[in-house]
Image (cartoon, rainbow, N blue to C red; front, side, top):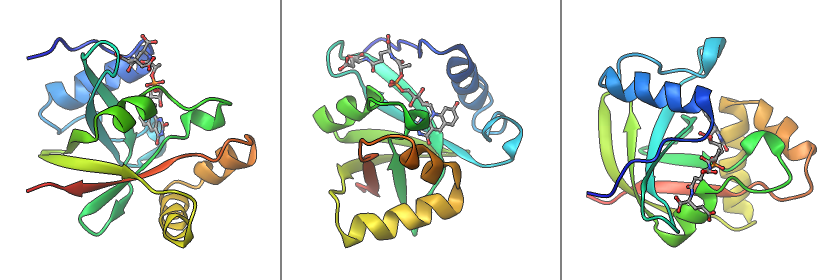
Length: 145
Ligand code: F42
């Protein structure tokens, strides 16, 4: 089993530890917003390490929409490149853990549909997109079973 290397961001690392350490019963929301979060376990594309990335929970039926917003930063978060290199991930949604496969959805009417669902679930995504000229990547995660 590859080594788990925590995020370099303290608040993120702590959320993962509380969320997973409690078996998906605590640390389930983005700070005090009450908005639900999922944990995406992915593979470092350079280190091969286990990386754990909390993201807002945006569901499309049984699928999840993953938004590489990183607060509207000028560059994509590096987990974006991990997912492009290795699309097989594990998604924890509270106590449910599933093997899933992700695919990036290119700019299209499908992406617009998914984007609208994401913004409805987490309105700041639109503010992030408005403050950067990179097109914030959208992935769909589908169950592999
Ligand atoms: N981020 C989002 O983009 N969208 C969200 O909806 C979101 C929600 C959210 C909710 C709760 C929470 O706690 C965090 C949330 N975040 C959200 C933040 C998210 O979890 C990530 O922290 C953020 O998106 C930044 O991702 P990142 O992958 O850029 O993380 C950085 C800080 C990081 O950990 N960098 C590591 C480092 O050492 O600098 C490297 C990590 C890595 O994967 N390295 C790869 C490897 O091989 O191991 C190499 C990557 C490469 O190509 O260089």
